[in-house]
Image (tube, rainbow, N blue to C red; front, side, top):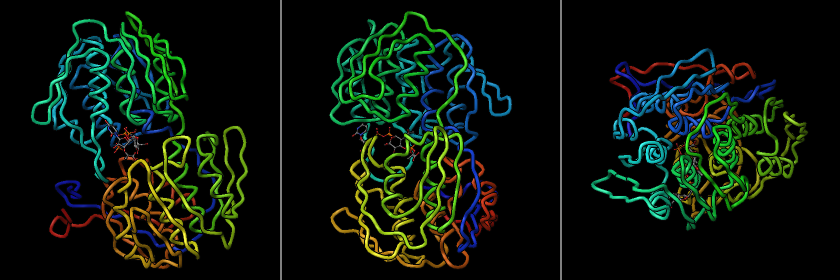
Amino acid sequence: MMLTESGKGSRILRIEGGLPLSGELRVYPAKNAALPILAASLLTEEPITLLEVPRLRDVEVMLELLAHLGTHYAWEGRTLHLHTPEIQSTHAPYELVGQMRASFIVWGALLARVGEGRISLPGGCAFGARPVDQHVKALKALGAEVVEEEGTFYARKTRPLAGRVVFDLPTVGGTEQAMLAVALGGEATLVQAAMEPEVEDLGRFLGMLGVEVRGLGSPILHVRGARRLGGGTYRIIPDRIEAGTYLLAAAATRGALTLTQVRPDHLDALLDKLRQAGHRVEVGPDWVRFTAAKHPEPFHVEAREYPGFPTDLQPIVGAYLATVPGQSAITDRVYPDRFTHVGELARMGAELYLRDRTLVVNGRRLHGAQVKALDIRAGGGLVVAALAAEGVSEIEGVYFLERGYEHLEERLRSLGARVGVAEVPLALAAD
Ligand SMILES: CC(=O)N[C@H]1[C@@H](OP(=O)(O)OP(=O)(O)OC[C@H]2O[C@@H](n3ccc(=O)[nH]c3=O)[C@H](O)[C@@H]2O)O[C@H](CO)[C@@H](O)[C@@H]1O
Ligand SMILES: C=C(OP(=O)(O)O)C(=O)O
């Protein structure tokens, strides 16, 4: 995967660590809720307004894809207006889909709206196998004809899609794909559906358009589409992964942080671990106040589907635990090989090793180093480690951080961190 970000070269994030973070942050809306909702906007010919959309690279990529398929869009500050009077192409090409996995679910939306869709295998963060067999299984179970040829999938329907989908495992994207596929005139019961808050948010958005969705937040969903969908104005849920990243940064630097416009219930698994470690955590309806313990205890983490500990915070909690004296252990039941950050953390002095897909961490004081982010949350982990480390760190792969963290540099600075972005000339940039 290329890390070179522009013709000019590559950017690095330079962090002078060792300062406790302190202050207040308003949590931004969730990338992983915004992306499927953007794909779902293809379902209706009525205008849609999304309030407070994260201005992230992934959102820009999705908008480029939607524009290719026929969507007109306009930003008004952080408000996004979308309108797809008609679909102009049923083909989602590799150049666009290859950049980001979440784009794959426009397939279901195309199938619902115009009866067919052609899409390339998705790209996205590479931290182990990320198959799409459950997406294909769902569409077939609903009655679609699906053909795969050399990494391109073609689906069409000859009658309204309907049926019962029994997923082999809970999949966020697979569940969202099936929800979109039946949203126009179809009907589905989804068994072992994903229960993530982002799936629930998509369900509520579809509800606003006129789709009947029952069972949200449970593993059995009933979705009944309407013959024609409306439009409307929708506000996306706060980003629990962004919120968790900043909390872990405050914990790693033994600082204090108040988060506002957050959903504390979406962070239960993390907040429980932080309390278990001895940190002080207070919550209100839409805020979290965190004060770090000076000498926190280590703990074990097993990342699982929601409401378990999120896999997207697993590399980040690993970075935090690398700063906590004592032994911790981390496993990931969702992506068992999501450990691209481990070698990089070791360069910062972390003592950690993988045994039978368990990461054992012996926490200690870290030191600054030159490291490389190889995916979005590995990058989040390296930022957390660098903030806690003694001395200067330079993190390559700003591209990945920009996929998921809006205004990262400014937000960290507002909390007292010493952070800057520097451009590395092309000759020195990594690829
Ligand atoms: C844009 C977005 O929302 N991304 C999130 C989404 O990814 P994504 O939707 O890709 O993740 P899934 O929930 O589908 O993946 C969960 C598990 O199911 C497996 N699987 C999935 C589909 C399939 O067809 N076959 C299959 O075997 C995956 O390999 C993985 O082991 O949920 C993941 C799990 O919470 C998060 O890490 C990602 O940040
Ligand atoms: C892995 C992530 O995104 P994607 O599924 O798009 O790769 C993420 O948001 O942590």
